[in-house]
Image (cartoon, rainbow, N blue to C red):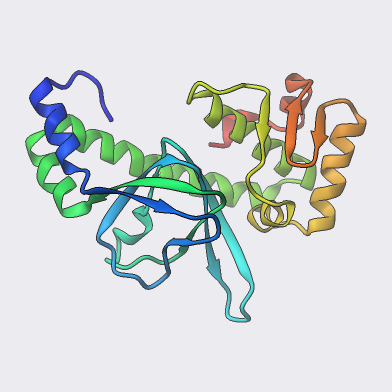
Length: 220
């Protein structure tokens, strides 16, 4: 949320949060086809968004963490077009979109912030398309790891250590890679001394080497 609000304006923002909702690991926050009613601010936990192909295969479209907004896919058609699944026990703040629209008319700073969030999603989707279309497997994985630590660091967490809430298969689905290819890329980074890997724990030992594999300015 934007800074610089008065106490009264902050109270209005707090009042906009209808309720908090807890989601167990593996449960759906919303499903493709559900009516779009609210946006969700992730308070605790990690989510993945995914769609199903005609043959039933799952395609991961994104990963969302605490401090981020989820549910904007439903704005365009008034229905969600993907599934949002908790990768661990999570809690979200439910923000009815009608209330956001109403309050945005009163608070221009809130409206600007909502527009920035939506713009960031567009930039991210365009960057992912470039990622899938033009890069080798190692470049894709480097971009993915750099993006994760950047987002975590922005929330006050370590800039070099992370615990992957998603499986390597889910990473592969997101990056357009087979599970075996993802595992080989992890192994090569580890053998080259760029990262240390212990199951889902990853420590980036040589961040500059990871950046040389991929230019982080082109991915968000």
